[in-house]
Length: 116
Length: 117
Image (cartoon, rainbow over all chains, first blue to last red):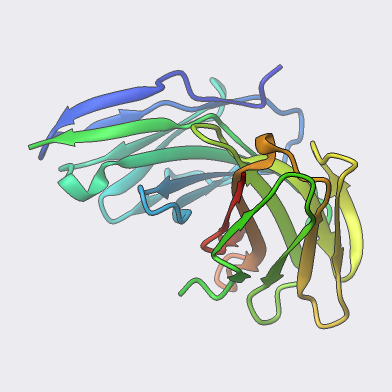
């Protein structure tokens, strides 16, 4: 079974609109962390946002927010007021295990294209 | 600059050859992770080291090996290279957010793009 599932291989969104990138996860570990990374065409992996499994509130970082629904095991990334520079691959990832012996598993990614 | 240094940035080599990729983690980070990203693929976990010890293995081929040295830098050795080994290889080190110790995230290097011809 896939640990991290991203069901949208590609998305096209009009500039200035909000966009939601879906991510569902599967774990039996009560303590885990969820991450979103952006990978532009230049290739580097850029950390966007983090949500811990015990966090009561949804994480926010500027235009990025994470819609964390624990019971549904989903951790969708919301980008508000999209910009042309948001065009990139976006990866959802999950960390399980204790520090020093943890695993970080990535989804297959969503390619987001912002249309002017 | 993320603080994680990978060298070289680009590498072109022939099939059957052996190469070594190097990673220096952020200062103070004890864990190093190696990932492989093939064309249009997600990141596949290869191996993790923590303070010099191997802690976890993913989908790492027997032709590949890694180690972490006392100064915490790590090397990934790829031997008997095949065309299918062409990929972007990332190193990451884990980071502790001092304002939230439960948040230990990961900082990635800029990657080494390996092309096997």
